Image (cartoon, rainbow over all chains, first blue to last red; front, side, top):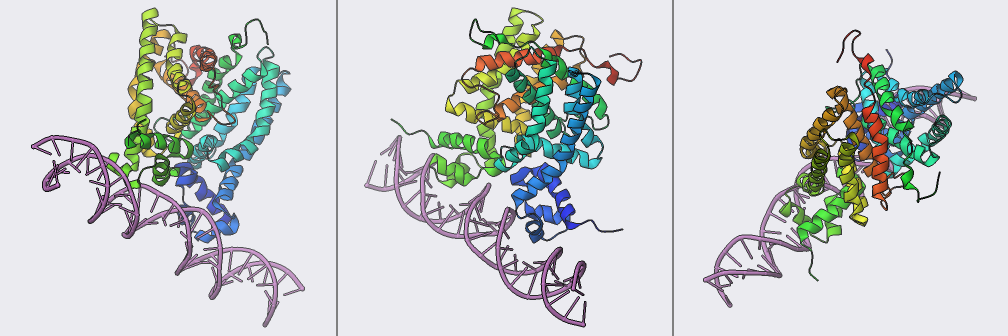
Length: 215
Length: 215
DNA sequence: GGAAAAGTCAAACGACTGCTTGAAACGCTC
DNA sequence: GAGCGTTTCAAGCAGTCGTTTGACTTTTCC
């Protein structure tokens, strides 16, 4: 029975503290107390509170994004252009699966990533954009292939609405108004895809354009 | 030219500070500095930081909720049961209109209310539940009338997804990834309703129930 | 074995937090 | 103008924050 490396213990504790209290609300004192580590250890290993947050976020988001891209490739292998439902499933499922496969930590991670998508704290939002930008672009391209009649700008708008739902789903996990049944993630995924797909495929509201023009 | 009452100046400043920095991040010092008021004034007028937040939130949410109910009544007057699109429009439009009618302050209010729906801070979420609970129930009833075939539990789930989108829309207003065109709120409202309505009306995923059962 | 590197620790830094205090300044009626 | 509530104010309370320091112990490598 070996002790876990302090660096990892700090990440685990930070994950929970950030999830429960946000960036401002989580104190390094609380993190180090939970990690059973001296306060100075945070600065020794990570340099500052900001870089600690970035490291914590990266550890979670990067594997999820890889899984997203893998599922998107699968969708392309099954049909080209891929079915809309397959794209949406590849987009939303990894977040949900990640959470399901991690037991108690799943709910913590869910809240943490959900919060991170929302928090306007400069450090947080910049990190999220860095980590998510490329994957988002890949999915937008796929959506455009599956829905050639919907303007790209409209698709981007709708994609962001989907992100909004996922975010909310994650943020509220483990709380009273939670939408995600951690016990049956697959059901939630199907439910979500069934909700999103017709919305994505709805005809574009052309009346937004000046009269007479077409997209 | 009369000076605005200190109490109101505090509310205005708190609104902006909470919008930009959240409950934890906003300090009473910053609020009172912006309001050009002594720190003690906050406790004189509001008692504590928590009740200041509550007052700030109430001032915004209550008129919006009244407008929501008014539009819902209009929808019932036009058709009973009302058209699904009319219900959704009544649900999402007041938030958007509020923001449009207020110029610069609109973006601040949008971020503030959006944040408040997300922030897990106990005080914040409790206040939101208090202020929103009844209106949410009224709309759920209306949705059930318009969509008798969708189980109520599924409708609640979907309604929360809509809240998620509105929240995101509000939270990101005035930022680079904002979804709300403050200059043309009506277009955003139509766009949003067009996106949401088919999602709401989509057939329920019955495979979530044990085999053989029906709702 | 001993020097260099890596890691740990208690203590303290200055700045900031929400909140309280007691006195001064105000607008008001009598 | 005296008296009386209401409002404002500078100062300070006890506590927390992120971060730094310098001494101490442990590990690594020649």
